[in-house]
Image (cartoon, rainbow, N blue to C red; front, side, top):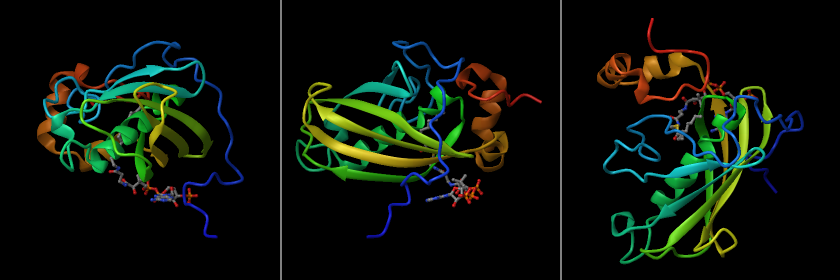
Length: 192
Ligand SMILES: CCCCCCCCCC(=O)SCCNC(=O)CCNC(=O)[C@H](O)C(C)(C)COP(=O)(O)OP(=O)(O)OC[C@H]1O[C@@H](n2cnc3c(N)ncnc32)[C@H](O)[C@@H]1OP(=O)(O)O
């Protein structure tokens, strides 16, 4: 059987919780105010509120509304994948790695009706150099409810140049004018 490309490589290690990681129980700050997944300033976004766990783990709730439909009255799978991408990516807050998604695998196990609450859980599985491996689930109705979606992902740590090289100048300029629009994960800043 072909191995998933998100399978942990033999050289992966399980890191310590970073001393600067948010306290267990603390709500994570949005990493970017206009982020589709977590940004409070993004009117079309998911507005996930993500909470740090005791270890290398996070939880969140996703309220599924009529705006998230694919089939009548049911959530769109791409939206569910987006929610998983967001919570998995935010594990970088716990390891203090500023990462982007390189690969995201999702299994859709049950339909998710509009009006339901999806309780998301995510954890670090290991780190190998710049690569962070993570997995998570979305449970229907309660943290121990039936699993509706599972995801595994590989994130790759990037430096500031990833965003300054590829990002649109308008948004980068806005952040230079108001650095509070982003939460710094690494020790870099957009201001020269
Ligand atoms: C705390 C922060 C909170 C952030 C939350 C954010 C949540 C949302 C996250 C996102 O949605 S980010 C947006 C979607 N992702 C992207 O736009 C990333 C686009 N891809 C890239 O920019 C580059 O492909 C990437 C930075 C991921 C990698 O390019 P690099 O040139 O830096 O590295 P390279 O290609 O050498 O890959 C590094 C390692 O990862 C491996 N790799 C890269 N892509 C892979 C892939 N798709 N599958 C498996 N392995 C992969 C690659 O084989 C290699 O392994 P080795 O180190 O063992 O040689």
